[in-house]
Image (tube, rainbow over all chains, first blue to last red; front, side, top):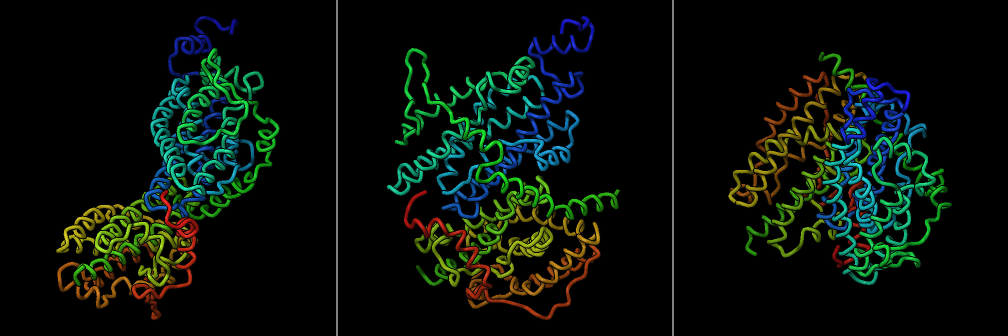
Length: 310
Length: 251
């Protein structure tokens, strides 16, 4: 921003970003920064909320009362994360109604991984272990994002997500310790959720549409590929510890790099699901729209009652 | 197991069944509520009921040698003894909250009475439950007012729910031989004597919400004898799927 004078709001903003200071709701910020944040935070909020569906799919069928309670509490946490995040987006001037409207019209996205179905109980383990595990890696990095409300929401969310990741892993441990049917169920879930979990970090850095600018604004603090590597490095030993096989023939420890090398993601599959051809894309969005539509008379009644009381 | 233990087991199981079946129905609201806030609130209430079911099944299970999961997941429809009002499908948001209101007004009185139980475990469970119910009751009373005084549509739906549910409320106050014996021993709470207080509180709240107390002559009972509506079998087949498909395993 060479043209910005020393006293201009742009200059002050740039200096604060440079100095690792948090930007707060009432501070001046460039339009692009605001729009980029609204896009990212609302996508994150929608992901939390849409993610309630594949897990809710097993709520009424959980195998034990303890598991049912834990799963319900977890899904409730995810909804709570959605709420904090919608609130964080509201501090940028985007109302929840607008954001939900953008979701329903397809203008806003949610994490594509929730377009995969939860077919067995083991999928609930795999989601907690892998999907929440991948989300945490990303969210830990976002604790130092430059926008204050988003960074603070991440601190709280990370604490809860680490419980979720452990409960998912614990489901897998239990299955791995079980009989041949249970072990096969766990392996099948890992086989189906592993690659989509790696895809959660997004395209390679060179091909990521928003990455470079987001990194300059310090909205994003680490690259997609770095975060993905971190996830692989932490997850492979967890799979080995319970005797499950990661479905990647190219996976190997690279002592020189101090990291695992792993195979290439099938980007055609990634694009296929992102563009609407996953097993559950339409179901997830239709479900959200239907619930919203079914609840319209309730929201109308709430408003009418509040007005009469005022 | 002596006679009292055997009766106490059956009593704890039926109270557990009430909480289990209602908790299961509330779980069905996940991701379906009219607002995200209500989705979370319904989950909170559901968690209270599931927790209550676990405590009561554990109390029974310690006496009869079965685990909470065996009690929840391996008994068939005829063995379940929940109140019929709780197994009815969740319906719309008005149906769920009006049912909750009728139940909360009852449970508020019932668990208060049960804290005086001569059985310490039962009294302790009632003490914990009473606190939860106080919160549920504030919320469902508030919703009844919002429905009744909100829009014509919300009032119509709430009245329809009241009219449908009213035929099932008598069962909440029915005392059978099992409960009569345990009441005499100071273990069970006498639900029959709560009717007048309940009727007065509910009438007051319904009228304050500009709704009408149904003038219903039909009444349906049978849950305590395992005589259910056809809805329960489907609820159980979903809830018990894992333990039926993969029996005897650890999860």
